[in-house]
Length: 140
Image 1 (spheres, rainbow, N blue to C red):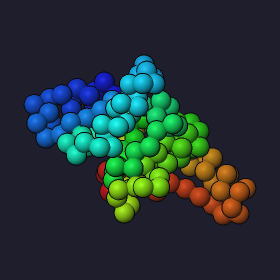
Image 2: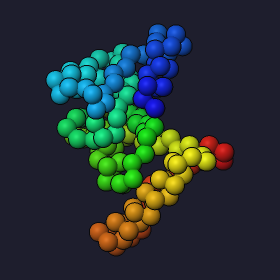
Image 3: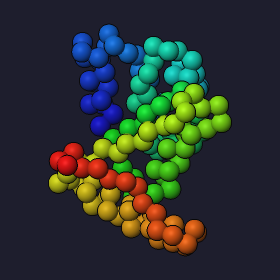
């Protein structure tokens, strides 16, 4: 998925509009730090293509105002940890919108339902209430 998104960012349609960074499992620690610094400080760099697992810990993305996840994980805590990278002290935006791309009719449907059930169990256990992530279908 990251390769496809990077291909789109390299296309003539988007290349002139904004710059981007990419961090995945193959990115060294030093390079990760450099790329995060570019995202945080360069106004022209408004897109960060990030692997959820590679960027779920150890980085701060307070310059983000919108986060779009193109990959799902089976464990809700991994998703929440990745979301938290943009919700930090010193956050530039007054709020951060988080979206998940869930492909209808794919394994994403199964994973999303599983994540919802797990969130309900965790919320009921920890907070005494049912928790969930909101879902809005593109068909609606």
